[in-house]
Amino acid sequence: MARKCKITGKGPMTGNNVSFSQKKTKRRFLPNIQTKKIFVPELDRHVRIKMSVRAMRTIDKIGLMPFLKKQGLTLKDVVS
Image 1 (tube, rainbow, N blue to C red):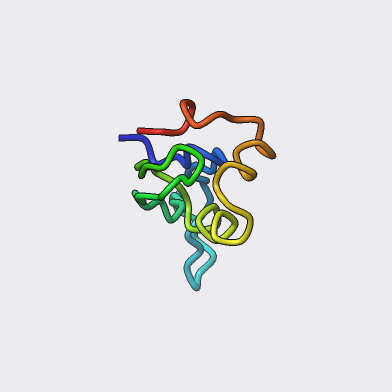
Image 2: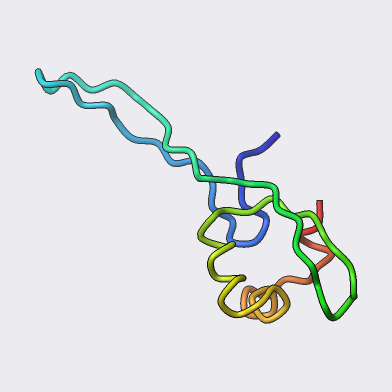
């Protein structure tokens, strides 16, 4: 299962853990991905989407279909 947002494309990033002695070891920064069921009034049904919490906040603000249009996606591209 890939840790990737279906809408924004956010995925894991890499970086370093830095100890007090400045010794560096590799680590991963994972995005906060959640599976969410959203009601789409245009289709009059619920859809289940894996997305980041940042995408959820934007969808709450402007709605799913306008956000997908802004990202250049269709509902078929993001439904899991």
